[in-house]
Length: 138
Image (tube, rainbow, N blue to C red):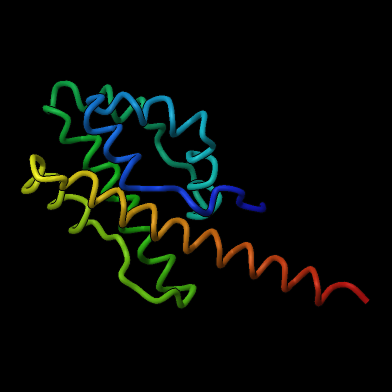
């Protein structure tokens, strides 16, 4: 799969999602192709965000945060496996920026790092695919 969205602006995506109470990602993740890309990169199916969002209602929206933090940790492991230099997102980074700094741009900082890591992984995978295609040609 060739990844087309390698320059997502995480800070602004986090900004929009924070001020729209998480509903922005309800639309952006499936329609923006992010869900499919994450499944391709991580190599397994992930729970749709809308399910995590619904499970978050009775948990004061802790569940979607944990869902995103788990994805962040998996992205960090993938970035390290590909040899991508840091800083990377992580479970700790996503969770604590959202919990402790929620009124001081914490969610925006957390999603910024999340999407920076995702962009770096997608760029590396695109470069690896191009290299393989060049080597396969006679």
